[in-house]
Length: 574
Image (tube, rainbow, N blue to C red; front, side, top):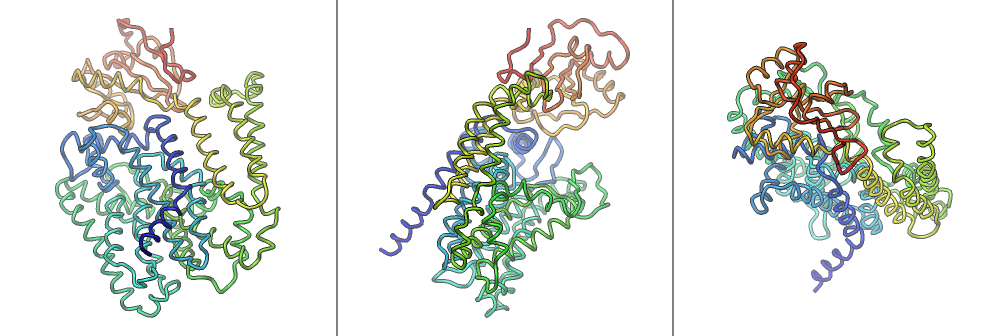
């Protein structure tokens, strides 16, 4: 009876934040197609594995893809076996991973803050409010799944009422699944709470030998799981792939000066870059004074939950700052730890300094003022565009819908200016609706600049007719999944390779990515469409070769199909 009651209580604790977040995530992730180049690259790798029945070595554009381990691709394949190849299942997976992350954070908070039940309720609300975490969760990528495994591994270390010792087998399995998701970086997200266990865990202080001994065996179990895939994959993928997989693709992101046989995006940034990016990572919580005053006024003795959160967030943040390669989404698991830390600090403030916890000037009014200021900007944007005071093409696109969303942000600002109980939930709801609103505004006004549908349809017709395809410059798989390509796209660097390709494949297609259009493109190309702040131009290979050779090509049989960046439905211009 008590177990049934406990399960019922746990289910009730998920209401209403989990349904609210799920609905918002589903609306946002299906409001437009997979985003180039994040989602399209992941789908391209999954499709190539599927199309060529190579379940061991991921491939991108016909070459072994060493940058990621295969677990996410396998999970995508599992859905494709049941539902067929589609882009719906991979996006549903991301929603499932994000929801699981919220639930895991709630359970960790319940275990680590038994003296403050409010933390278990507040932490998931705070996490779902974070705009960056929500928007990045809409990408079909590896980091939300990695965050889920990191939180599951840390949950395995936390005590329960019936058991103080960690569940070491589960800890090792979760590490292994994380390693199979994104490689060795998984260890950085979980090692410090384990290594610093005696600072927050009474059991670890009392049983240090077992804590470190069994923990080491668990880490080794995770590494064995990774090697069980990596060793056969390394030998199957060839020497170059094996070298990148085991050394260069990780080392080049960590250490400056490591050379790789192929260009590698190391995303190098200075040491303080993450510090400068904290406002973007922690919006809107960064604008809630009460949380930061609560954190600044913490004094000893700290609860085990606070020490756990600090051992998780601080050393991990420092190490990631010291690593050469940096992207905002690398810290996605630590955003959960940060919300846990802030929720715990606010709970302590409410207990120890109730007067300060009720101070109106520490409320959400800064965010309310910002929201209302943004609403005013959205209201006046059409006038600014009409008077030619703003010339940006992005602003021109936004102006068509800006006043509708100005009303939304005005209401959100008023909600954030309210005082009294429920301040944290008002902040979370406002943050979630704000992010969903921005995503919707992007879909209505700017998605046409990211939607490669027109060129994809042309590429797919050419591929089905067995015409060779090439890209001027680098190709990141942006057409592979949507066009269901089974042959690689040739990458052309410079004029001689372009002429050679056209000579070998006179009926082939060449895709170019110019920053500006000229008269020849609008006259001789097959298709022109916007892409971000530039253009995608699809050429007959022979025609482009003639132009590069200084020869006037013959007039095309059909006029160039030109698509307007302002027309989100992509009607062909007359």
